[in-house]
Every structure is written in structure tokens, then in C-alpha cells.
Length: 276
Image 1 (cartoon, rainbow, N blue to C red):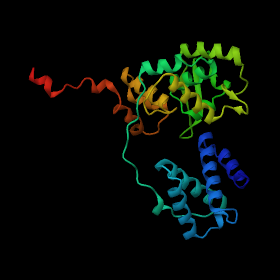
Image 2 (tube, helix red, strand yellow):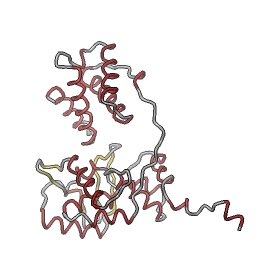
Image 3 (spheres, helix red, strand yellow):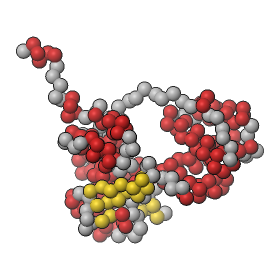
Image 4 (cartoon, one colour):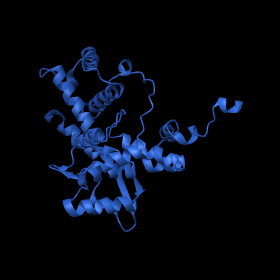
């Protein structure tokens, strides 16, 4: 970790997201351990460097996204810290076939939240769903970002490096007021033992909630954000507005929800109906 302390500070100065910094530093640390103490990443000759990447991707069976993140982390580290550009084109993975996410229904969301008795845990999961947040955005959400008088919550320096503002639902306000009275957070809305709440602990809260609700779908914490967008679309919210609420730079990213929404699908008649 000490080898990458300066790089971590640089990423923080450049305002990379909390999750991106953790991911990059984590992958660099694993790769550094993989090549051994006798080697330093920036001193590797090119053939050995590229072969080491192939080996770690193969042995650890890195998924498409993880492989891309490793290459991005190594590329940025080499360029920013050592002024070196490395050609990783031969190692860039092919995009896998797109798999549409499993979408939690309104009833399943209700069961997840209702069966989460711990008010802090319920408040965290509810906030993610109510605002369509990424996990890192929830973790970085500060008390100062909540304007209860204007009913606005500001998501600071989100993915895409731009702030966005979201409406503060009255129902969420009531829950957070109850949570605040009990826990009295200082800086961050949800705090852990080390100031900010740990990402792994947040994921565990969701996993346990899904188990309690006996949901068998292949879902992750990010599924709450997927559900938020899909349920808005199904209720008639304009796709462009959903793009703004989610903080997507490109409308194509938001359009994935048109493929999982039931609104348009249920309006399509089967050819069998034409025979009646």
C-alpha cells in the first residue's frame, strides 16, 4: 500500500471518486504482490510486464470489468507517476454479450426494506433506492449536502466528475429524521467506525436483506439503482429526466432501462390476439 500512497493522494487531488480510488489502489496492490517484492511495476521490461498481466488475469479469472479496471489503473499509474505510456491494446478484453440486469419489483423492494429492522440499515438501503444512488455516492453523502428547506439533495463530484441535484422525497425525510435522532451523525449522513461507512459493510447489509426477503434473483446493491430507474420509467417519467437524475452523460446508458421496463412490453399484443 505504501508504494501507492502518492498515487492515491494524486487521485484524490484530481477528484476521482471514492470507489474508483479504492478499486485502482486495490488492484495495483494485488498486482504488486503478484509480481513479487524483487520487482517494481515501473521498472518492469515490456515483455515481462505484459506477460504478468496475462498471468494474473488468467490465474485470478478476472471478469471483463475487472480486467479493464486493472489496465486503466496500471496505465494511469505509469503515466502520472513515472511519465511512461504503455500500449495495452493487445490485452484489452472484448466486450461480453450484454446481459440485462434482473430488476427487483416494487413488492420485492418493499419486502427488502420492511424486513430490515435496523433503522440505520433500512435508512441506507431506502436512500439508495429513493434517490437512485451508486453505493459510493451514498457513502460520500454529507449532512451538509442535504437542504431540507429547499427539499434538495446534492450529490457532489459524482461519476463523470460533475455534481447533480436530486429531489428530497418527503417519505425519505421522515425516515432520515427518525434515523438522525437515534444515531446523530456528524459529517457523513451514514458513518462507520472510521468516519465513512465501509463499502463492504454496505454490501453485506444488502445481501442480508435480500436473504431475509427470500429473493432468488441475481441482484447486487446496484440493483436498487436499477430498480429506481426502471420503476420511474414504468410510471411514465421521461427518459431524458431519468438520465439527469441518474447522472448519466450519455442517453445510451440510460436506454438500457427501456429493455427491462414492462411498460412498453405489456402494450405489445401477441399475433395470437389477431386471430380472435
